[in-house]
Length: 277
Image (cartoon, rainbow, N blue to C red):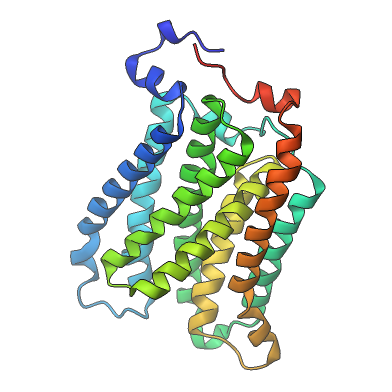
């Protein structure tokens, strides 16, 4: 239990945790990210939107800035070591289902990508951009949000749901970019289910590095294979990945409720939560 009296007001505020603080953090990050993205708009003027240069300017640079903001936040609280250290709570065998469902379709999408049509530079650009996306979004939602929720003593069911819900809500911002309402609603369902899968990946692998990499390979494979697919039945199967992830994530919510809730008295769970002063 930290000595709250010895902490600065800034650190004391975050160390006490609370779901509403997780919401505040996500909202502040989203606002700073959106404002920061405007800095790179002039650089994208006149650039071919199907080019590697556009991907780096429009996607990689803004999310790189977002990553820097998140790292600075972690440094201000001294949280980076625990964030990237071994998870205090162990996972269960059934959590590998989430990892397998996501990873299988990532592999299928990469296997059915027309690399010649896409070109090396575009593939490389998307891999770089997606790596920053995976880093920023996982550090925020499966890193800081999970940490803040646990510090307040919330149940792991609440941790899973809130981290996934905040991750999903962040994607509602695509409406600001002109995306239609219906595809945005579908995306919100998908990202919530995907968020559940990433939470379970964090739990079962024990380190946030793995959901970061799995998230990065998901985004890059989706964008590339959607734009440059090969022909054939395997590509059709790969296209079912989002549906499978939605079903997997929503079904596994009930496993979290039953299996993890049954272990709420586990000492490992209790030690992962700092009691309030």
